[in-house]
Each structure stands twice: as structure tokens, then as C-alpha cells.
Amino acid sequence: MSLIGYARVSTADQNTDTQLERLKAAGCDIVRQEKVSGRSREGRTELETILDFIRPGDTLVVVKLDRLGRSTRDVLNLVHELDQKGASLRILEPDVSTAGPLGRMVLTVLGMVAEMELGFIKERQAAGIAKAKANGVYKGRPVSLDHNQIRTLRSQGLGATAIAKQLGCSRGAIYKAMSAD
View 1 (tube, rainbow, N blue to C red):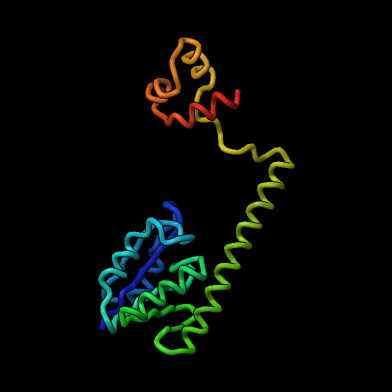
View 2: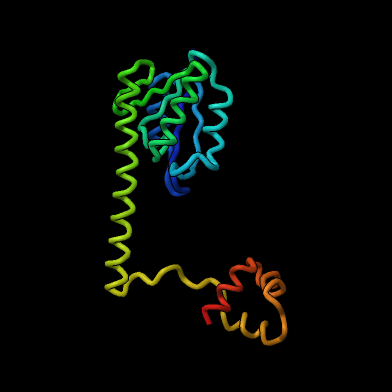
């Protein structure tokens, strides 16, 4: 029976140091970590590796439920997969394990709370952006392509593909820039 730790942060400027310390202190033999959004399971290769190799009797350990996922459905699907493999999930904060029926029920409630919190975060972010726009502070992402250069190349008879190759960007970016003018 192994304790396998999983640490995750969403962005490159965050780090997993605190999670790694807590997982090792909890007795995890193996700890996998990644920097990727928890909104879905796509692109979470370290988590997939754990799920591919976890054995009956093993326990997947995360510091908090939101490190495993932000979607109740994804979390419950993960718990189901672990259960099918004879493994369990343990969350350190609050200390919950799916080894028993009470743990599964608590996990379902915590998953719903994590998903609700994600909704709150999105609402606060949208409100902050709206306020910043109203104050003239938020203007969106800065323009990264020189629209004058695109117009010049276009007037020379170059198509979107040729312009994109010359500027080192996608054709879609060229079409978007041309439609903005």
C-alpha cells in the first residue's frame, strides 16, 4: 500500500513547495506535481500517470480538494476511477478519506463547494474587470501585431498565409487584425 501525492498549481508563477512539504509529511512515497488548470482533466499528464499506475490498496493524497479539480463531476469521476482500481483518495485539509461511505458523502459536498467557489471567483473577476473598464484602467490585452505593417503587406498583394509566415504568427491573428481595421 503506497501513499501517492499529487500537487497542482494553476499558473507558472505559482509554486508547489508548500503542497510538496505537506504531502511528504503525510507519508507520501511518491509525489507528482504539475502546473496546469484544475478546471478540467485535459492536459493533466501527471494526474493521468498516477491513475494509470495506481494499484489496489494505494491512496492518492492531495492537500486540498481544489488541487484535484474544480468540477464536482471531475472529482466524483476521479473517485469512481480510484474505487474501480481498489484505491482511495485522501484529502489533508480537511482530513477526509474515501475509504468509507461517510468520506464519499463529505467529498461530494466539498466538490460542490469547490465548484461554487470557482463560480464566485469568476464573478469577482468579471466585476473587477467591469469596474476597471468603467474607470478607464482596463483596456484589454495590448496589441501585439503591427497593424500598419499588416496593411502594407496586404497592399503589396500578400495574402494572410504569407503575412502570417513573415510576421511569425497565425493566419487567424492576421484575419482578426485585418477585420479590426
